[in-house]
Image 1 (cartoon, one colour):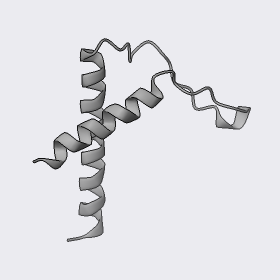
Image 2 (tube, one colour; image 1 turned 180 degrees about the vertical axis):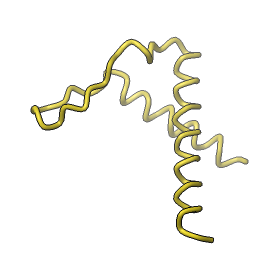
Image 3 (tube, one colour; image 1 turned 135 degrees about the vertical axis):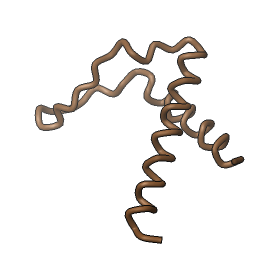
Image 4 (tube, one colour; image 1 turned 120 degrees about the vertical axis):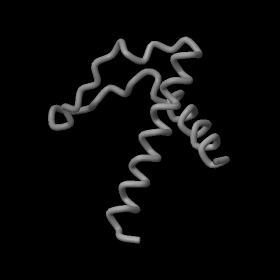
Length: 69
């Protein structure tokens, strides 16, 4: 299998896990659309997203679901 197919597959899986996690967060009442995320890394410290730690938990849960397929 060519490297590009492997990378594409992993990227696809990552996007699915992120989408599933965000969907579950929305179902649980999180507001995931209310914050504009900036990427001004060259201007000093970047304030983390307030739901970032929770998002990581949801991604881990979504990943478990996809591993069952």
